Length: 118
Image (cartoon, rainbow, N blue to C red; front, top):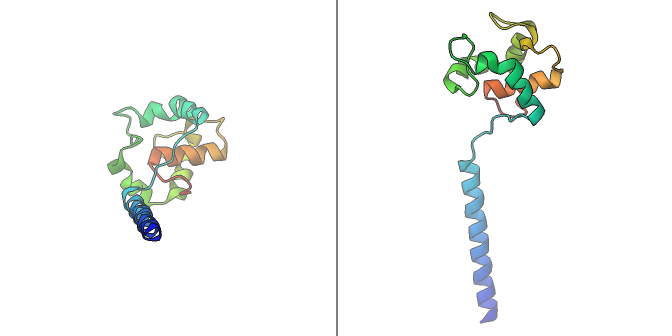
């Protein structure tokens, strides 16, 4: 009888594990890039002035509808627009102290891209 209970218990544990794995795969959408505390300060000082204020002409960070067509151009185009300037955005997005890694992280964050999508 003990062997039967152990097998039955093992089956339940296996079933719970498999159901949990299946749910996790379906329920978890792609996670947009997150910023480190230092980069969050950079976002606030360089990017938010335009990307967090209405009426500037810049697409707002987190506005999926505003970024859909822009994201379709590819990360390279978005990064080039940031580095070279584009329309009203100054070169380097007004962050002359930003490294390439900083700019990549900030572009991914503002555009709502997955981390590592670059």
